[in-house]
Image 1 (tube, rainbow, N blue to C red):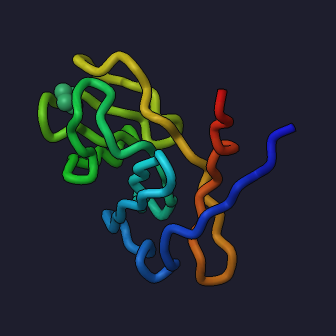
Image 2 (cartoon, rainbow, N blue to C red; image 1 turned 135 degrees about the vertical axis):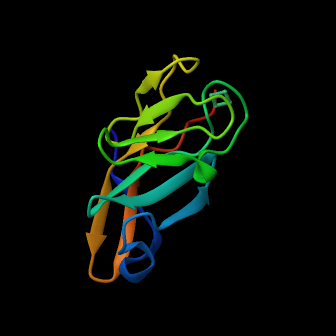
Length: 114
Ligand code: FES
C-alpha cells in the first residue's frame, strides 16, 4: 500500500509570478518547482540526456515546456515527457499542492531496501 507523501518546497509568495523557480532536494529527488501561466509545476531538475540542471533552462509558455540549457532538448512541464531530441527519456513529474501559504509536492513512497 502506498501513502501520499506531501513535502513543503516553498511558500506561495516565492512561487507566485510567472518564471519564478526554486530547486528542492528531498531524499534522492532533486526537484525544480516553477510558475508558468499562473500554474505551478514540479519536475525532476536533472536532464535525462546528461547530468545538466534544468533550472537554468528556457521556458516556452506556448507549449508548456522547459528547454535544457545544454543541447536544446525539451520537457513538458505537465508530465515530464521528453518532447524534443536529443532527450528521449522523461524526467520525473510531481503533483503540486497548495495548503495555505505552503507549496508542497507529492513524492512517491520512499524506496524500500532489498
Ligand atoms: S544535457 Fe540536456 S539536452 Fe543534452
